[in-house]
Image (tube, rainbow, N blue to C red; front, side):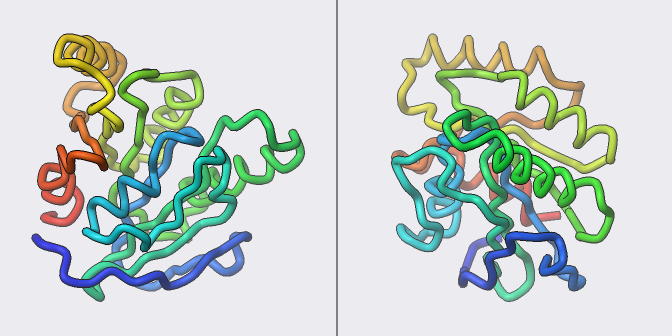
Length: 191
């Protein structure tokens, strides 16, 4: 499936405004500074649909983007960024957990983004535990793979696969080179 249109719809800072219509929602989640914004922009073929920043922790709300008038791409706040206050960090954590746990939102698939160079961290493993407990289908995107040589990427890929339940798809991706674009779109849109 190709992306013919992608438009920003809404930013939500609390659970009361969340989009809960019948359209499927593809949620993008990962640590702060993992490249969520750049990855979504690459997937939709637009440079500036999702605002990206060199400052980690920039996304502090849930952002909805309507794809082909049929599906939402949902950009969740990054987790694990230590330089924002503990109280605010906890508020973002609760917002992310509400999205996955409440049952109010039709989550179709979750794209868990992991930095290929950094690998899986405790926050990523905690997110996987939540997704599994609440039975959300997910795939893992090893992002920024252009920063690694083939040997390093192979080692990173194998390390991530070893930490996942059997059958979870792992896709190496790069917003810079567009690597992984077709594979990710096939997994999240052709369902």
